[in-house]
Length: 310
Image 1 (spheres, rainbow, N blue to C red):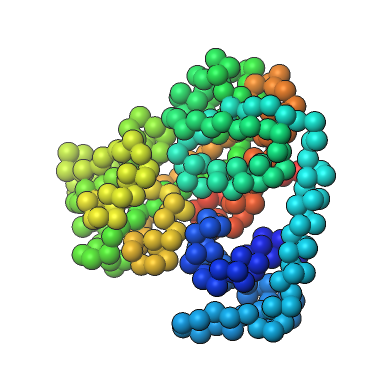
Image 2 (image 1 turned 60 degrees about the vertical axis):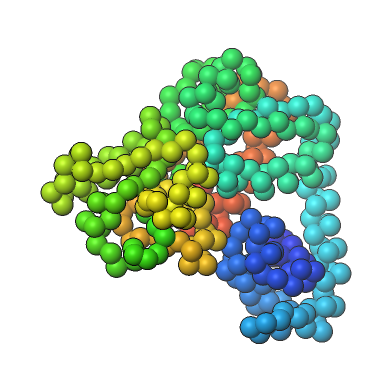
């Protein structure tokens, strides 16, 4: 039985609001509803009475809340027992912004529980800076866009993220021809990065199919994913970005995903020095597990775990 589903049930029983539960668990209302439905199917009971205005526990659901809490407590105790008990100290973790907006919140929450003696300080930087700081031993562990690395660095594949066309509806719709959208302002990630180059190559190829010159295509790179999302929300451009970053907006209809080709996925890796201490390698293992769990909840065409499965 999936303990994540049980955690969702407990929180929904207390909050009684699907959107608020989704916000707190860093997921979507649709995912919350799916988890409850799956849990009900596995138990063979109805946990909630749903209608358009209220959400109430059934009699059976109310009886099961305390049992659910015991299950989660037992699972957490199991994780703590399995975690290294002697670790204490400080880990300097470096990540890029995609990780901050996806995996990092869940990782920090679980790390605090299973590695209570470890203080994790994290930095958010571009891949080039992350690699340099790892080599300089200013960081202990990094998650970055995959690429060449020094022989004294251990690096392993972690996940793949694709970029999709995201727009504010009206005047653009899912039926708008791509030739029209190519004439609008396009926004993607920062120049001189792998994601930017993937988008630029794709857009230039598409433009040539429709008789457009390079100078006619307006593609801008932004230094911040959060800034790009805001620009797209207010209609100042069509974003080519990881759709996984705007799941809530897509579900609410605030933004739409256009049915155009996605970029080849950006591969991301986890790296640390080969002679890293046990506290670093154990933190890396936990990060790998959290990333796998996170990716499994996403659509594979948006985000896919590509790391080692032990």
